[in-house]
Length: 77
Image (cartoon, rainbow, N blue to C red; front, side, top):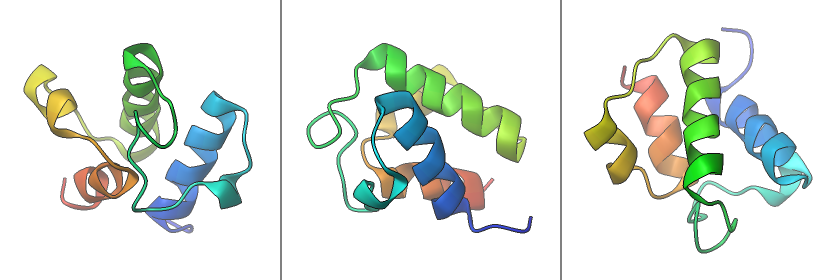
C-alpha cells in the first residue's frame, strides 16, 4: 500500500460528504462531527472493503464511531 490508510479514508469521507480531506481529522466522530448518517457510514465501510480488502460484519459497523475506528479497522484486519 503506497499511501497511508488515514489519507485514503480521509479522501473517501471527503468525497462522500463533499468536504476537503484536510477537514477530516482522526479524532472526529462520524455522526456528530462529520454529520454522516447510516447510509453514508455504510458507503464509507463498503469503500474501505473495496480499497483495503477488509470485510465488515454488521456488529462491526455499529462499533465504528470515529475516523480513528475506521483506520484501526483496516490496519488491524
